[in-house]
Length: 153
Image (cartoon, rainbow, N blue to C red; front, top):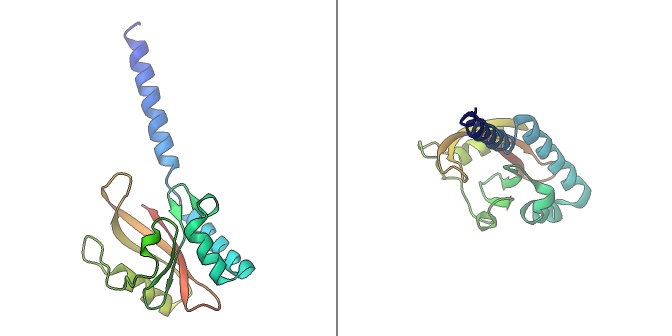
């Protein structure tokens, strides 16, 4: 019985770690809700202020591993909640680790419709492992571009 107690404690701690880790990943529903909230924020405060907020106001625009990004229809990053160094860069030719030009895929999808999911592979910044990722994208009314939020699958 004495030997079992440390083992039970170990497995309970392990379960808590896995549970906490799983809770850190955003869901498809949370990504869609964040994009819709971002569009409502653009409407409320204007594009310029909203784009600044998405990049700098981490308390409101970063939840779990989710963040808002905004791109124009040429593939230029306008706002990015996780990496401000990307702002102003044209990423249209960016490829995932399998050679897929996913930013071009974003732009093509937004040219064809007003909202969609785009799948690609990307290194998870926490685990450093290549994982499947999906980004929910939605056109921003009155702006020649779109907002997105990605999730790891």
